[in-house]
Image (tube, rainbow, N blue to C red; front, side):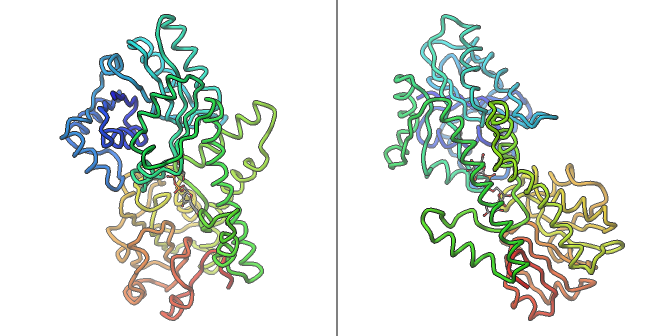
Length: 436
Ligand code: UGA
């Protein structure tokens, strides 16, 4: 099977490398010449565990290649995946589909023989219809189908998620396209991953509904954490007690500083906009998005409170900057709001992240002192804050921290430690929702 990935960003690269690993012949296309040149040299522009090896082995096996030329590979392809970015549009939060439609136009000109065009990027309901309209208008003669096949990859676990998915959603009413897509996913199909054949609009909405629901679960437990703090209950036990009910499930009930990343914030906003446009506003998702925004700033207040009510003239060490561990992604990371609010409060920020420092330097406000490890980061600090639960922050040497800190205060926004354990080392310890 010949597959083209249009867009060699996170989704395109992971999906392309995994499809190649299934044995398909995959060409990843991107407009950025520097990116393609780097990929040809085996340099991966993102941090994702296992991706570099997967790209290298499949490139060597000549199943995976990279190019800036879209037309040649598309003419040969059985399936063309659109995996370009859909950032939030400034002003209204709606997904910016200009890259998707530009890709559709380019693909249209190159089509030759029956081809399935697949939207892999997360796109609002009706985008597939518009892609089909654009291609049909430009190429009335072309033989093609447009399918929605949303991805459900988590950054940091993307390859595993791709190879062992909970489900594969294929949205099309065209039987030929259904058969071709079943062939594309055959190796997983044989591993008994359920394939859900739906209409195109249903597939498009399923992706948003899933992400909005997960964001709701997180936001719900975060509110319960706040309540736990007030009533003297433990949110981890509450989450366990809830999660053991199969109808609820135990995942995505970890209280923390609020969700971030390239998906939940953007996708919840896009769903809110779609629901408003269709006259059926989603009040739950609207509440989730605004509660999550407020939460990030509330986390800075928690730090200020732990520092005795003011951080003016104090130094705060921020451990972890990315929106979650095992990624270098800083998009919508809670650290962005927390660092900004603490600086506004007059604090000097020292920061360390194992993979996110390069991106952070371009996104955090100026004045942050970037450090080489956790111990250098806490030097002279009046408090240390764990913002991202990287493994290396799970076994800190508290004696070493205490020796160089100006005050032994730890604010653990990910509940990595047990309170007794840290307090026994002479620290003031503040966590999220585990009583006082
Ligand atoms: C998310 C979904 O999990 C994927 O299924 C989906 O494919 C992807 O978005 C996407 O739409 O492309 P991702 O953003 O990579 O994946 O990361 P998650 O692991 O879902 O974490 C999102 C945020 O929620 C992080 O900030 C994380 O710290 C936070 N989170 C997650 C919590 O605060 N508590 C939890 O219990 C779980």
